[in-house]
Length: 254
Length: 340
Image (cartoon, rainbow over the protein chains, first blue to last red):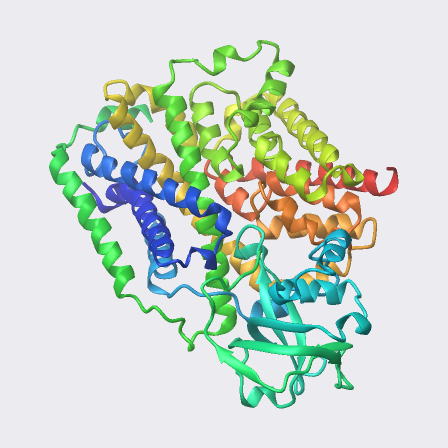
């Protein structure tokens, strides 16, 4: 049997194994949430197990390379570019293995915040949901809740007596990066591809000396008029203390 | 092709126990690779590259179970259901047949990734190319999961749900009609898939159902998964290269808003069952026609879907389909923005 024919037969099974093992390992280690919404966890794991059973059945029942039945796959024609297909197939398998299994699982970073519209012109919750938030239990509010209220235009009077207790990653305020950063999270509705960054501005001059961009911090602070002259944000958290913290098990909010 | 059949002798078959062991050893080695891989993100990698990897993996992890589900359904249709079980129940009249096919997603609520292997199975069992296109483009929209999530996201607000259902139904049936008129519909299929269809029944007849199922699984995964991984890589690459902020600034213009959200749908390659929740966050910025165009165009055509469809259709066919779906979606969106 030629290597080319062997590859044709088993390429899908090998890629399936890479995908299945990556999925199950992420699920077992509680890291599936780095990539998909929790509503898909059970379905994803169940399909991985079913696919694993089919892969094992294929290895058990099928001949190693094509027998006389597999004639739809033409043998290497010996042409000048005949090496391209096997080379491409190997490249895909290697890239999938490195991406899914060798590189450690990771969240999105500030590089993606810069590509997307932080809070920006999008409204992450409706006016009705925003009004429902008003009067709610503020101690349970997430970065998403506070940023939604800020972008819906709740005024300084509303925020005057409120204290936010939030955890998020550090990303600079592009309008005044020396003095202001956002404590941010990504909101995910399906998977990391649709993640949208939300954040609360934090006035903390010289923050770069203490907290690298993308590091995680916990903040408990009241809101105030943003003292920054250059920043576009009118209201900000003005904490006296910020605590570095580890990335939470569920880094995204939903 | 027939020459190849005649020329190929049977090779030695492997004993099941040995193959089983080989499979388990490979799986074990892959698990060991994951276990001994570094667990903390590498700070030496540039953020942009890390995000490219994360976004690409996200597409794979999200789509893979749906692709597996579609392959399992395809195996059921091709191997376990009685011959003609589905197709002989379809109406004889071509228009009515396509209408029923466009509603098949109500019974088989698989997202667009899973529909591709299922459609391949249906074509292999006798569905025409035009009919398969109607099923492929209607099913991601006209299925209960998509309808319920769209209703949850938008309610009856601005008729978005109704326009989505009507638009998806009409475009899918229009495409089915157009390609039913094609003089040589088999020429629309990728050569490799044509060969597989032509020879599928011939070589499987002697095998048991379980062995045929295993064979179909390896064939379909060999066709679909490389396409999925390439599509995921492209989607991740474009997302890290293109700023979404540029698109969002176009939201209030009746024409540009439609084109911008269609471009966004093409790039994000998001599953139709949840795309309504995603685009909901743009609801305050974008005009309703743009939202509908996103919700109609995205489930039919996006980067990941094109990569998957390429396993079945020629590149020329896919270019035509992309153009037709894009034009129809844009017309629908513009009509809603200007007329409704």
